[in-house]
Structures are given as C-alpha cells and as structure tokens.
Amino acid sequence: PGAAFAPDDVFIDGSAALRDLVPHFAPLFFAPLHTAGDLAEAWPTLAANLSHRREIAAVYDAGLSALPVQIVSDWQGSGVSWRYSVLAADHRTQLRVVNGLRAAGSLASNHYFPLHPLFGPEDRCENATELGQRLVNVWVDGKATVAGAQKTVETLRTLLGSRAIEER
Image 1 (spheres, rainbow, N blue to C red):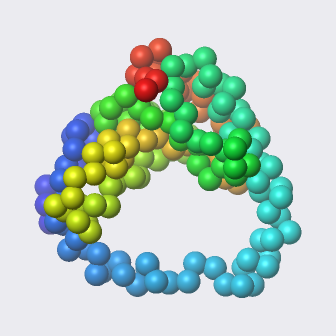
Image 2: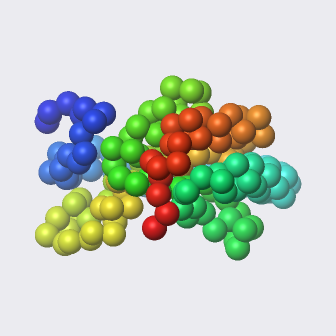
C-alpha cells in the first residue's frame, strides 16, 4: 500500500498501485450489469426518467448561468443527462467544491482518473489529466430532486463566489 491520500494533494501518481489492483477487480468489469428482465422492467419508465433528468439539469442551467462556470454537459443537444458537469479552475478547487457539496448533503463527484497511467503510462495525455483534475459532477438521476438541485446551486454560489470556477 502507498501513502494515504490527503484531500489537499494536487495530484498523486498512483498509476503503479492502480495497475496492481486491476486483476483484483477484473470480476467486476465482466459481471453482467443488467439482465434482459431488468431492462424490460425499466423500459416503461424510461420517458419519465429522462424527463426528470432534464428537469434537474434545467435547474442547474438556470442557477449556474449567473456564475462564471464552464458547463460541459450537452444535455439539451442530446436530450439525455447522465450527470451535470462543470469544470473547476484547478484540482484544489475541484476537491474543495466536491468536499463542500458533499458536506452540505449534495450528491457530487470528481471520479475521473485518467486511464492512460493504467494502460499506457508512457503516453502523455494532458487533456485527460487536466479534465480529470477539474471535472465536477452533480446528480440528475432519481436520487436528485428539484429542491436538492436548488440547494446544490446555492451551495455552489457560496463555495465559488465569482472566481473559483472559471470560464475557459
């Protein structure tokens, strides 16, 4: 085991440790996620699910438009929103924002570790590394509510003021 992760660390190169863990998680990669029965059961609720996700994404659009954020979700173009994503100014801001959102009870993540250190450590993938250290996601799925999304927007306004997430 390597050194413990500290929330304020800017970047930890854990690629060797992660490569060592991959064989242990291989059964999870190949496990069936859903059966045909699961999909058949979910199919009748698909339209309502997508409508709910669009409703929550619209709350984020309206609430975050006054902040200087770069929204990277194109849910309006596709009609589907899996997560609602924005880019933080840097990795420290990303961690501060996600930790602040979680402390306030909002559903948020920053789980985009670039994969090239696992599969091609000699490759230089600056965009993947930068995005992985800046991306902040907030939920739009069935766990999200309009009131929760509004609370998340208010928390983001408090955390960010007008400078922590920047337009690029």
